[in-house]
Structure formats: C-alpha cells, structure tokens
Image 1 (tube, helix red, strand yellow):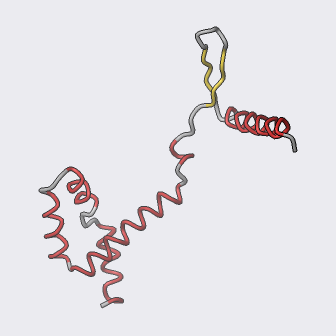
Image 2 (cartoon, rainbow, N blue to C red):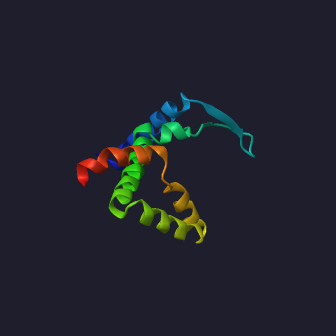
Length: 116
C-alpha cells in the first residue's frame, strides 16, 4: 500500500472518530482568521470513568480496611490512625479515608468469626 493511500485512510479514520464525538455535543469556535471550527465537547466524568471501576475501587478500599481491622485489632488500628492525624496533609487524608465506618464494621463483624 502506498504511503499516500495510508495517509488517506488515517485521515478518514480521524474524521469518522471526530464525527462520532460531535454526535454527543459540540461547540463552535471562531479562529483569528475568521474560520469557524467545530470541536467536540469533552466527555463527562461519568463517561470517562465507568461505574464498575468506581465500585471496584470502593470495594478494594473497604476490603483493605476490613483486613487491617481484623489483622491488627481495633485498638491498634485506631492507635495507628491517631498517629496519622498529626502528620502531613496526605497522612490526614489517609486517616480520614481509613476511619472505621458502619460498612467496614458490618463486614468485619461478618468475617471475623470465619477467619479467627
């Protein structure tokens, strides 16, 4: 296949992709030389990050918290979290996420008799 033919197909694919993106919404922009350009709108966050990945991340965090709570025991777990509260912004953020919440407590109560 000649290079000009490959370039042609690459351009057609790019135009087809842009046409598909424009179906979901677009905005017009006038360049300095007066040419009107049509640009596709950016995808919303919900379309960029599938819900199954968000649910998987939450399940992983909760599972990790349950594992640590069972492994360390509640007293040691809370003591370590209190040590993080006095640290940097990231430590404080991690401590806030890793707090024992009702969902973590429920799963810990369900799993502890099976593991111990």
